Structures are given as structure tokens and as C-alpha cells.
Image (cartoon, rainbow, N blue to C red; front, side, top):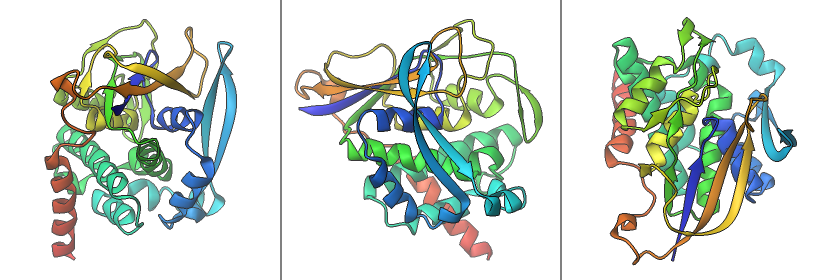
Length: 282
């Protein structure tokens, strides 16, 4: 038997929603904080977990509050971390092997998408929003949670496109944001409109889904054992909740599940290659 997780995203996906769903599903907050301490950025943020209601449904909301020390330097350094810096931060932390591999791959996917949009090399991308402290915590925390729960397979539902505009480092952009649209295209993600004109899929959430999910579509046949609910930051016409379904599947029941949760080797190789190139330039 293998452990399978299904990301049900009726109102999209964001990094903090992923982490909230994992905590709601049972990942210990003390364990997460211990692992985050190994990143060496404790002075940049404070972490808080809260049970909230979204359309009268209880879910877990993650709050990552930047410290005064971080806020004073965020614009000059932390928000502009490049891929080699993020790779080094993750690699030196001594995290579980799968967590390190997955985290590097997620940020590599983000860099590739941003680079394609802006017409530059991935190692030259200033991550801004997605390279900020909270994104590092969202990505590493999600990978820690999946590893702690022993998830072998990850499948994701089709993603809603959202609509309207979102303000970012480059000004007002249409939703989905260009990097999100690029990742959706690269992963051949099935998309649809749920009629909500808001940003529903963030760059961090999209990178997590497109990097770690082996496929997108309806839930497969498996035995459901647990559900984790991660809350988004605002109320919407339908509950703004990412639903993480966790259960088991008989690995012999279908060759569809012949491979364990993994990321494509090229993503990991890219991450290490970018770092090596950066070191050569120093």
C-alpha cells in the first residue's frame, strides 16, 4: 500500500494554503519550527497558526509575519534573493533528503517560469515576491509536511484561472500572472473559470503543484483516510479552502502509480547547475 494525497483546489492554491492544509492534517507545528530554525533565517519572521472559519467551515490559516529587522532590509536584500542564494539556504540546512530535493526543484520551476517571461537566464531572476522569506517558509514547509506524512504520490485537481488584476513588483498584471500562466502551460494543467475575479493561483502555489504533482485531474480510486483544510486569506463566494485528501492506494491496482512521489530529474539538476555557475562567477 502507498500513501496518496490529492490537492482539491476549488478556490485555487497558494503556498500558505498548502502549509495550512498539512498542519490541519496533523503535521506537528513544533516539528516545522525546529526544521525552519535550521534554515538560519529565524530573525526574519514569526510564525503563527490559527483556526479560522471560511463560509462556516473550519480550516487552518498560516500567518508568516516579517520581523522589524526583516522589514528594514526586505526591499534591499531578502525580496531580491536569486536562485543560487535560495539553493544555498536550503542545502546548508540539513533538511531531510526528500525535502531538500523537492524544495530545490520548486524554486527551480519558479526561476524557469520567471526567466521565460522576462527573457533572461534563470540564475539572473530576482525573485521579489516569490523569493521573499514567506515563500521560502511556504515551500520548505510544504515539502516538510509531505515528507512527515509519508506521502508517496501527489495528484492535483484542475486549477481555476481567477481573473482581474494583481499588483506586484512589476506593477499591475492580469490574472493569472504571467509566471503562473507559464507554469500552467509548461505542465499542461487543465484550467477553468469558477467565476471568481480574484487571484486564485499564486506563483508559489502553482510551482508547488506543477513540480510535485504527477498528474492533474479528478481524484483517483483510493481509500480516503484523512482530510486537511488550508484557509486562504479572504472570504469568497465559496469556501476559500484548499482541501488535502490523504489515503492509501494498492500499488498493484494500477500501473498509473508505479513511481513514488518525485520531481523530474531535470528540475534538480538545473538547481545545482545554476548554483555551480554562480560560484564560478564569484
